[in-house]
Image (cartoon, rainbow, N blue to C red; front, side, top):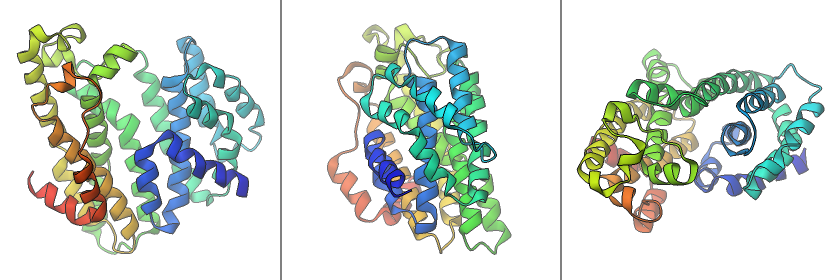
Length: 321
């Protein structure tokens, strides 16, 4: 178990710099479940998105294998690990490859989580997987489809986190519980949409894929990066950002319902979403998104201000919306 936990802690900053920053902020009782389940979800994402040169049926089968690996009732999983490891060479990124090769170590840490937590995790992992498989072959054309896609890949994470909060938080007020349950998808949808907006150029040029609902926006993948259609691209950006802003009120409601005995979770939530809002503000009217080089980023000064007092900064930011 010691070596397995070391592996998970070592892998986190290699596969996500942002979550390597925020997961350690969590309260002790939430840290291990969230660390483990984040890496579990990342492993599923490897087979949804990172493995190259396999057909769609094999991809879906491997994604199902990841889910089966984390079934609490499935104890004899060595054969599943060996199968997944057999495809690690199909992953170009060395760190994501290492995560796949260490899936047996991740499973060992997972098995040491409370059984109730494993059950919660498995429920949401299964839901995430079904949605991911659906959108492997379905191109997003409308905002309704965008919402559904973002729910599956990120809103489900909010579902797991919120059930953890209900499990470990001191919640005695019905309205508090209601606010958490009614808004648990908001952070996932908001942050996923910000990533989708920010990454439009990279997604199209490097992955030949777009998650913008081009049909409803009246554009196409070909036109949006073409300077001849700059006005149309600018209009589409405004619509996309307006849609993302629609989640901020729900973020604020959820935040205020976080139990007082989970201050680490409040910080975790604040940093992630304050950075999301700060990124949104950098994207406003920024055509570098389509025609520039590199990602649009939050300035280092603003980043450090958020880290210095995330709760205060988040509250100040949401008031503007």
